[in-house]
Amino acid sequence: MQKKANSPRQSGTGSPAPFRRERRKRWPYVTGAVAAAVVLAGAGAYGWLSATSTVADPGAESCEQVPVNWGSTPPDSRAVADICATMTGLVAAWDENDAVAYGDWFTADAIYTTWVGTHYVGRDDIVRSHRALFTGPLAGTRLAARYLSLRFLTEEVAVLVSRGDTYKDEVPDSLAKIQSYTLVRQDDAWRIAAFHNTERGKVMERIQFLWTPETRPAAE
Image (cartoon, rainbow, N blue to C red):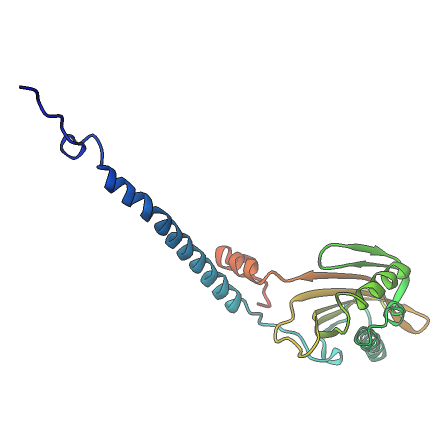
């Protein structure tokens, strides 16, 4: 008598065809669910890191209130007032989207580095680029600033550090960029000889401080 061949389930050599088809049907849904869970978890973690990445020192609301380090330079209240007048004029020129007036607050050979790393040399380059920005992506924007420190290197040279950002309708609660101005005295006025703009990476900063707490600035 001829022996009957074992079925796949009986022999253990494989799953029956209906079971394999059912498994293949479920696989895309399982994969999609796992991917969605990963995305949601990542978005939640990103949101938490961003929300908890705050700064202890937001800066002074007005330039006149900025902490001043005189170094070896004797106190000169007029110098502080004149530097603050330069910053007031700079912000006013930006708020008017006036590239020429904005450029006038820089020295003729000033260097200007944007937050994306673009490097401009000279007032003409600064004016030309900002004329395009004020009629393009930055049209109608205004400047917000809070002041962190003012350090006099000599009687003729000072470095001002601020938090800043652009806005259109409302001043943002958190200013995203750190901006450094190197100013020099020229003809009884202070002009900007070098400007550097850096965007603060809130999430990366938070991760760094969690991973390596020793890297947190003393002021924070």
